[in-house]
Length: 421
Image: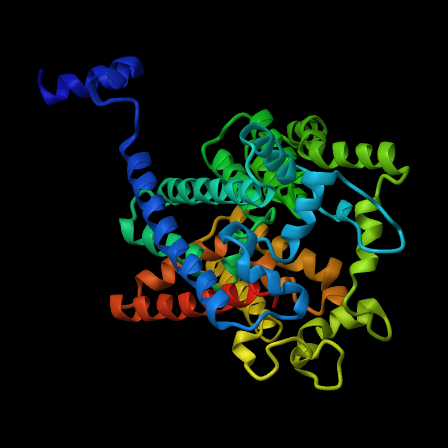
């Protein structure tokens, strides 16, 4: 059979194409291979850092000393992992006078609970397995998404973007027992669905699942609105689709509020309990504090209760995430702006990135002393597309040095995280 005849058969009959070349798209195979390699190599940094922390880092407080005797899953269950463990083992609880685990959304612990019950494994292990499966899936989808977005680019863009995702210093949270990797997977999947022009119901369902997986899940509605607008020929079509599909986009959040009303008589218990988690209330108007960027600069004000030295380690600024959080946050925001200006990011991507950074700042910037802002920057994955573009424009040695520094900081934060810092 001639090459021209073979191409004609493939174009006319997709089933014949599968018989001739196999149903796997070569682009997907390349994405899968590259994603697995980058996931494993960057994950190796985290695993080494965990064991380094256990051997050489003093635990932060006596209550964390037992972590010396835990396995990998236990060591990566510090922080939010303890709360998710309580949800899996005991269910949700709500006490209006103190922090409660109802602050954490249900999709991730439900998946972990199903795995634990089916396999009999420990809760920490089940949580960690779900996190890692979600993160690996996010790597694969992200590689495929970049290939789809930039069909004429070489493999360097994918490679650098994936290593940026794996080595960005605050991405240690994606490897721990928390819901961030679950949201990252669903976020990339939703953007991939829009890029591939999947049917509205499937994209809305993915966003609905994300809205029940993470407090920021509903932010995906913003790029979805742009998707609906771009695919609508008239304003009336756009409005009709909004009425039809936006309720699906918040279905996970709606189901969670209904559960809270049934269980606690308070549909917004997850919001009300956040007041008990406040690290800083500050003085004066909340709006004025936000407009003056106080949540960011107060970290470096020695008279502020948010000053970085109040959290250990007290004498190592760049190993203190409270010190570095505003830097990572502003760097992520700058990268989104650069990506939009250089047209490396589509409208949906840069709007999503800005929303992921600005809305958490408005909602909890005053209460968290900026500590969580760097974590939210981790989830604004268009940042890694911009980093991929920037790194591929550097010499390979310079790009490797940049990634090595990022990996060293990732390792340092991981080592301290697993020891309670």
